[in-house]
Length: 238
Length: 238
Image (tube, rainbow over all chains, first blue to last red; front, side, top):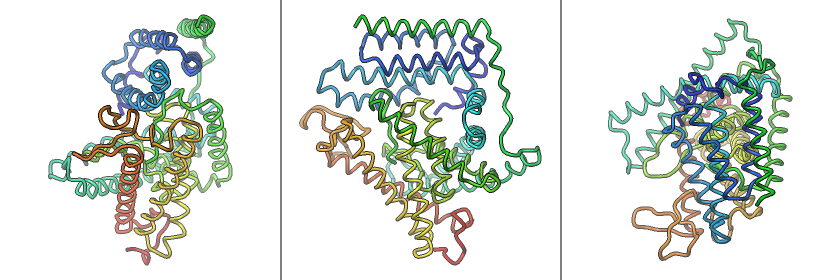
């Protein structure tokens, strides 16, 4: 899932996109999404994807992980594209480009913005309880993925995993997931007690300092406008 | 199991907007109706379950091209309402990573959330009569079957898949050759299934797999910590 790689890119990047505030980046991603979802044209979709590829290069994102994450939308949109191929090959291609483009847009937000800032933005609109669940989930994921890795490694070392022995795999995977859930619940109980000791009373405080507009925000807003105008002009051309 | 890997741009806007509205309304109602004092200690547990759902999607099951959701299991452990909330959190995080479109988060949550709600409610009522393991199996199988039927009916009613051929339903390879062009194809060794045969083979295998693993996990909990599965008492252990 590369959540840790995405997290690393977002926290350690120093591009103009990393320096921009989340509201301006969100505006850009929303314009990109609107342009992609609203478009039904191969050329305009290709231009938008090309535009995003340049943005990824500017943000110095790690291509290996991005390409790997893109496999899901490409494969699954391809399956629906096959259904559309009966109409025309361009209709099929549009489905794939839309799926890939939208995934690229959301990934761009993630590789240039730490999750904590996204949660801070969400906390302005969503109930505090829900934002807390997001924050705890995010924190727990990294702990659990390490534990799962260790559990799977120990099962493989002890001969508990065979690619073609489904029954053994099911039995052992159930034990792994059971143990993982058990550990995670015991950990969550400890975590709650620690948070209580530190004064948790519902709602983890998150800092928002978006009102300061920097030149990086200016660039991102200008790019958003460029996307809007470009998309509208392309709609009128084709 | 019936997680929708539909990319953005496939489902018409009216449906995904409606999906978002209903999903967010349900989430807000669950949170609003919940007793905050009682629910607050459960926040880490809900988040842990969400993280477990995210993590288990990386658990390999050998040659079978599945990942498990454990939404029904989340309903059994957290209760129907909180299970639904954890499903929403998982879907939003996955969509941001390109695993399923960002526009289909609402519909995805409703479909998988139904597994959680039905799984939780059925388990609550059946456990007194049949004990933990059998109830878990019945609840998971019913919830998965219902959500699968609902998603097939929904996708076919909006024209995304062809209910008569099963085309567009599988997340597997489409192949040219002897079978009809565009039919869904599922290959197990030398056996090749097409159309509805392929759809049913894949879906029933998926449902069976998740049901068995969910039941085994509940059985494991019964032995080590029965209080985790909605306070099942020791006398119901099997």
